[in-house]
Length: 409
Image (cartoon, rainbow, N blue to C red; front, side, top):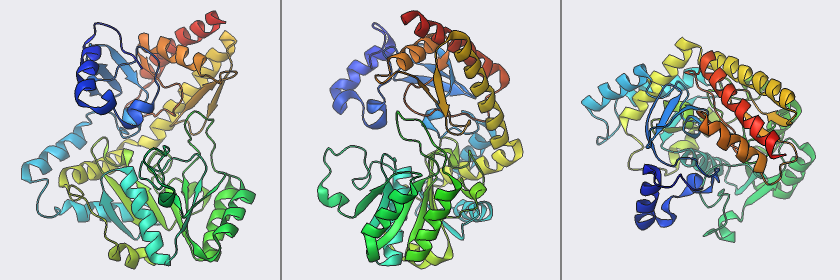
């Protein structure tokens, strides 16, 4: 991914290359955005962000998911300022930890308790650790292609990962009950947990909502084996349903992992669980130097309150539907076929006959030049800050993108 020459962004990349391995790491290095995309940003507000060269965009990535109310939400930032003035990283947590745990238990349908971390990978790994402690077993079932973090047991990359790191991980295909049952049979009496994402949101692939039959079967199999059902709600949490993303399906997990939208951009993650795994959660040793930091917990409490007050999920759904309908109309008018999949709050847009993503990259790069920040391979995100005018601006940029794809033949 190259930035424009002679730009502030290009100069920062050159400096970073000297002091950061590869110049960047993780998903920001692996994102494979089209040439011309900025890597460095100067500021953000609401659903807009500005790169270091002063270009403004309507943001449809929302910091890869953490921004659910909009950048720099006043209620959240005021809560952070108040807590920071009193103390944030202290010898132990502030009272806000108890208040936040109480709020999560009152909000999330399956939750009898909560504990806190910093990243989604912390939370998913903690869930797996608790499940193994609570069952005394080792095998964990994971859907092929699902992303649960960058720890060795689940990293999408095998660089630096040993076979032993994954010795007790078995795979199945999302929404494929026969595949799931075969993996359960393979695990046998050693099955500790089945971990599932809220919906299939694999990179560079059409998204798929869970079928009711699949979700129910996961629950039945966990019950029969006395294993834990872990719902990885890191990406979807608080964008589909406030009580948990599988609540509309009538299926409740034993353990859930949360991050991203939980604190509107402030670093926090959580594990929630039911009473069956309370003792195991108290027994395992999981910790981090900043896991009790109070300011992010204050941000989370304010985020949950603001989401309820503002009807955030309904607003994201309405704006996501406006975007989906508009893109469908533009696609039809241009004769350029696309596929829109997944929840409208987290849209995935892929082009037909585009195995190498050239159409998607041209579309997104063109839209970027006209003020809309989209992604050609990853699902995008709506926030409660998006309004009709913002979506219409994205659609105007998308119209230019469709024209470019059509012109390229």
